[in-house]
Amino acid sequence: MTGPALIEGLAGIVGPRHVRTAPAERLTYARDGLPTHSRLPGVLVLPGSRDEVVAVLRLLAAHRVPFVPRGAGTGLSGGALANGDAVLIVLTRCSRIFKIDPKNRVAVVEPGVVNARLSAAAAPHGLHYAPDPSSQTACTIGGNVAENARRHGDPHPRPRGGARRRPRAGARQPGR
Ligand SMILES: Cc1cc2nc3c(=O)[nH]c(=O)nc-3n(C[C@H](O)[C@H](O)[C@H](O)COP(=O)(O)OP(=O)(O)OC[C@H]3O[C@@H](n4cnc5c(N)ncnc54)[C@H](O)[C@@H]3O)c2cc1C
Image (cartoon, rainbow, N blue to C red; front, side, top):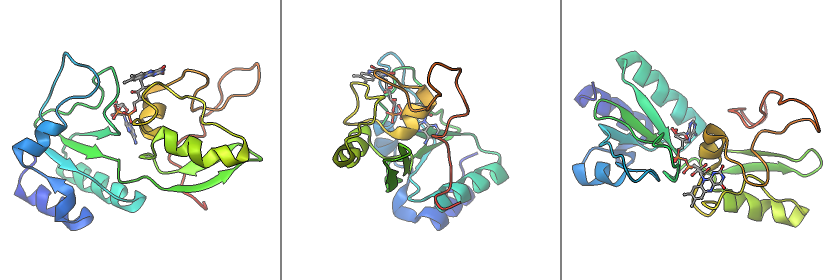
C-alpha cells in the first residue's frame, strides 16, 4: 500500500518536492488522452534521473506496490492511468539528450524527451525523428516506444525490407 513509510522512502530518493499526494495534484494526472476513462493515482513520483528511477523501482518492489510509468499523458488507450493503490511514475523530468550520432542515426536520450525537442536537436544534421504523431509537441520518447507510435516511421529501427529486429530504443545506459 502507498502508506507513510513508502512516501518517506520515495521522498528520500527524489526529494519531497517530487512526491505528490495532494488530491488536487493527483487529479491532474487522473486522465490521459482517452476521454472516457479516469483513475486517481495513489501517489505521484517524479524521478529526475536513471539512478532515481532505478531506486524508486527497487523501493516499490520491496513494498510490493504496483506502478504505472507515464510520459506526457497524450496516449489514446488509457495506458498512463494508475489506480489508487498504485504509484504513478511521471518521467517528464528525465529529459536529457545525451548524444546524437548522425552517422549511425542513433540518439541516446532519457525517456521524458519530447519528440519535437529531439527533432529540433537532430535537424542540424539533416535528420528528423520520424514517429512524429500529431502529439509531437507534447508526447515523449518513452511513451512513443511503449505505444509503438508511428506515422512516418517508428521508434524501433529495422533492417531494410526485413523483419523487425531487437529495438534499440530501449533503456540503454549511456556509455555502457
Ligand atoms: C492528437 C494526437 C495525435 C496522435 N497521432 C498519432 C499518430 O499519428 N500515430 C501514432 O502512432 N500515435 C498517435 N498518437 C498517439 C501517440 O503515439 C501517443 O499519444 C504518444 O506516443 C504517447 O506518448 P506520451 O509521452 O504522452 O505517453 P503516455 O500517454 O504518458 O503513456 C503512454 C503509454 O506509455 C507508457 N509509458 C510512458 N512512458 C514510459 C516509459 N518511460 N517507460 C515505459 N512505459 C512508458 C505508459 O505507461 C502508457 O502505457 C496521437 C496522439 C494524439 C493526442
